[in-house]
Length: 288
Length: 283
Image 1 (spheres, helix red, strand yellow):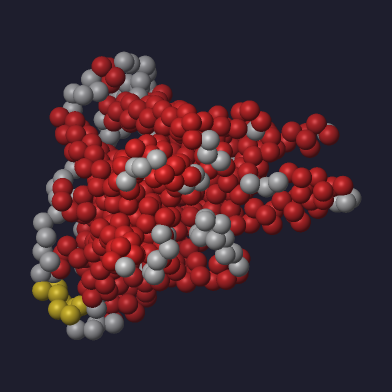
Image 2 (tube, one colour; image 1 turned 45 degrees about the vertical axis):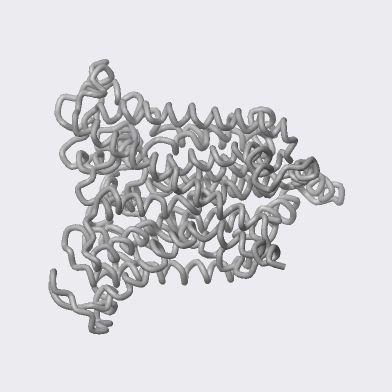
């Protein structure tokens, strides 16, 4: 009897320390951020007084940054999907014995420091760089045109930096497909295109859903790309949160802004999941 | 035309891979640059100088040492805590599994600014001095979930009959764990640890909120980027990259070997490198 009670407690002992760490340093801090967001006053003397005004203020002050954040992150996610799906498809179905090497080539760039990677893009898209020169020669860009400090550069950076989040889940879902299903569709007189849209793509949909979420969330919260590749006109919410906390030290507004952003992203994600209707998202179902 | 229809996707894939490798190429090439001014943005000429003097900038060395120390401690803690959680989740049916799972997924789905800002809010309210300790708290926190995911993916494909055999042959539960379970899941624990290490050493966003005066490698780059990044940073980034690459190749190789020994389903081997890379891109 005592033995079974002890056995039943084993998982709690195993998980205990780690989960407590997550509660203490993730869940509870979110609560404190909520508390901080309802304070008012000046630096050194912020008092808690249910000041919901911080929320309305931060929304009206930073509405353009909010809009921009969702447009940039959304566009980057879409572009990442357009780049990733065919690539993942090619590796999964046409990779042959090069599969692993190709996968490695895909993830390898992301083993360099994130900041350095972004600074490398700053170099590539720089005013006297090769890309700008080529675009000028092709008259796609005016003589005094530039890429840096434009939305294009920031979106390009966001698209690039989160690619593995898109490629790998899609690859994993394509890899699992039984090729015989596609052959069966073709035997039953479907064209390649029909076979793709009615067999391959639906099976890979959970990978697409997971990939888009894993790309959108960090992209929406990012401020590094906007910092290096954009100007203040391309500032995203992350840039404002960073500045409000670390240089302006207007903590209540900063906290309110962070909370609003988290909630906005959660709502977007929720709507998206409802729309995409995927249960395989977290992989919880096929785990055991 | 038919050829193009058939091979178009391969051409597309080739271009995509070239695109992905472009920054890497730029970093490596510009580590040999000899810039005229402070900014290493245009190609001026070839020099080996910055490779010879990689370790000649005291602040950079200190930042790198700080990063390595922080990553080492954070990796050990996160790997232990995360592995224990993974064992509990895969091995036991218990009340509260779903909320536990949820608690592990949520930090990975939260934007890093929010994680950093929330922690800073708490530290501010309690007036805690920012530095190594606050960074360590943050790094362990964001690494745990990734460790759980990697180790769990491996435990799911685990052949329990090996443990049963050990028990039948008279081994106690702890002996079984030490002599059978641990060696078999060791590759997963190692790749989880590597991932935790990579996440920690590369973290900028969360660290920027909770570092105080403690400068890590990414924070050094961020500070230096305002006034011109020393070319040595490019060389050091290249070295760091090569080390990570070697470590990754080593785990893949070791994992293959372990798989052959344990005859685990080959399906599982995408999971570890997948999480490994996905985690790394978090920055």
